[in-house]
Length: 239
Length: 286
Image (cartoon, rainbow over all chains, first blue to last red):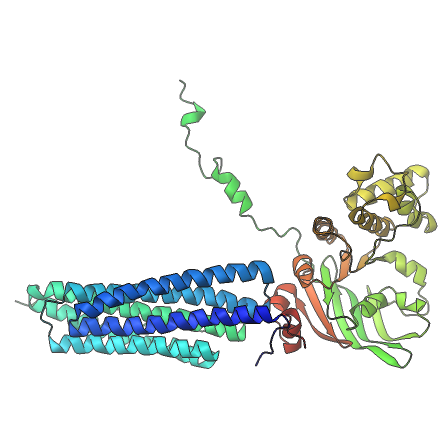
């Protein structure tokens, strides 16, 4: 454990910075959970509240940036302090993007609120939603505990999220081919699933920054790329 | 309106207004950094009477680059700096063990003349200390006593070149015969640097050369250090970590007489290996 700074005001500022990240993380987690619920449960009221919540995350991101700039200008941070400040700025950026993606999911939930949704499809969406939420929760824990190993585990697990996304993608494709009337709903769900997969990517970004923060070194191993849907072409429907 | 009307010419990346941007984006690093060791210190210990001030310091110091020594007061960094040109010889109670080689020759060998050594290894101190003589004589003093100039014209040239290298000539060229002590603090310090380089040294040691100067004068000296490193091996002791980070290529951290860590400056200030180094540079020392 690192000892405290001689200048206690600097110590306080670093703690305040960490508090903002914790707050942002908590809000992003809550927003994502609600976005997934609103998509699954056809709850436009919840979706609307979720969309409004994103503003708080944006405001906190600006605060984190202002604090970081001021600390760099006034304190000339070095070593672990510099890494903490740079990490905070980048993590705040990723959390802000996660908020945006969550907000986008909530908007889609409102767009398809009136449509019927097949149970089978929603199980897939719930599955990928849970997985991305779990990644976010774990990476935020790793951040607050400064646990590089835990961060690496999140980083490696992104592959699983990609695999779930692949199967949801194929499933949605099948529904669309079965009945063109499903295309509207399925396209929204497809974007929703893609957003959840992207949230996982932001969680791995955060994991990489935690690793850098704790060890001072970037993650060097190659992360397996699991999203292969960009190579998938729908098979021609057989008559 | 001719077809060559420059107003209608669309600037290309190379010749247009973007050309300036490309220039400013250039890497600021000037000279390539040498990796040859100019100075090799082995197991250097210094005792002041019974007290051991420096414990088994071993370090390679590279030629044509700036090495910064940092550490809290009393950590031994200045003591070690003074070992590099045998300034500790002047302290009766001081005893130095181990070896310091410059270009492979141990400077503590009995055959070495310390006066000749100090012409090769110049030193600049914390407080500018020009002699109470004219600007000209301050710079000419070393070349005179070492017999480096064959004629008055020779000496004039040495004085002017040294002042130019120290970035002072333009400011003093009309008053070379005025007293050196009449210059401002920053100018005095550059005069001392000119005096040090007038005897054509290979190594320049600087002990807190900017701590008595204002930020502008400090910036001038730092700019000068960066220019001088292309021709000299420079070792600087500084209490300002930002200064060490700005001017040096390598940094050595001393604590309680021990060389704790030495490495690339960017590594020391971003990812130090030792906890003690990290605690010091981040201001966590108890």
